[in-house]
Amino acid sequence: MATVNLEKLGIINTSEVYHNLSAPALVEKALARGEGKLADNGALCVFTGKYTGRSPKDKFIADEPSVHDLIDWNNENRPISPEKFDAIFRRMTAYLQNRELYVFDGFAGADPKFRSSFRVINELASQNLFIHQLLIRPTEAELESFAEDFTIIAAPGFKCIPELDGVHSEAAILLSFERKLVLIAGSQYAGEIKKSVFSVMNFVLPQKGVFSMHCSANVGHDGDSALFFGLSGTGKTTLSADPARKLIGDDEHGWSKDGIFNIEGGCYAKCINLSRENEPQIWDAIRFGSLVENVVIDENDRTLDYNDGSVTENTRVGYPVEYIPNAQIPGIAGHPKTVIFLTADAFGVLPPV
Image (cartoon, rainbow, N blue to C red; front, top):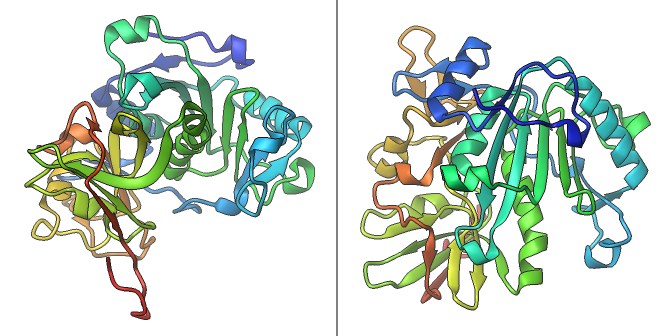
């Protein structure tokens, strides 16, 4: 079994450290550890506990000299002192001792010119499966020469102490650009890992002359690409999964002087009220290798009830982009000819598009 040395990070005295396991191996590990259940369609189903969505109030950025004047400090970009960051990091590494860890090395950025490499270290095999499917997976040759630009450590079982750590709650997402390190504590919601990658890329790409975008994208057979902007739940993933066009990506993209490219290698779709009739491509993508979050599963026949929002309305599934039959791989296209802004205005003041 391939392993990787984490001592340079200060993570020592671990149990087994598994490096870039395959999706089937990660599913096996997650099931053996009791992290989830296998649905009748083959997807691994987990429940994320207290946190079923992202916690923006729990996100902090280390206020370091090299980036202080480059960040718009506000209620979304909250500062934390480097000393507090380091103290939490030391306690987290102590927590990780004697634990099995799962490491995924992969890339963000389908265009190699603007690509960043990420090492993601997970306490949970199911979360490692998620990031394995969501980032761009390296070839064997790329893995042999891999050198991470940033590291993300996700430890849901590690709880912060607000009065000691200077954070908002037991959960915290902490980013240090000088240390090139992200710490995710207290939350099992996989979207925190995904958005941490985007937070890094949202800082890095503009410095390379690339516009980072929260949007979905697809391209027609004539090369006419389109962007779909909108907040969560407005229909970006659904509208971009068009059988008549090739899917570039469903959520995060860069726009350079050469065109657009997917930042990710997978999709993170909402599942609430999902049906084969309305969203056949997403329905069929929920299969072995996919990770389903917070969808109610029948204890007997293991069917998924997408209409049940009793756990949360924010039910999700993560899967690699190649699970969509007509995906554009690699996720690169020319300059968009169409830009669509989606709204979800319950008052009817704004049009849907």
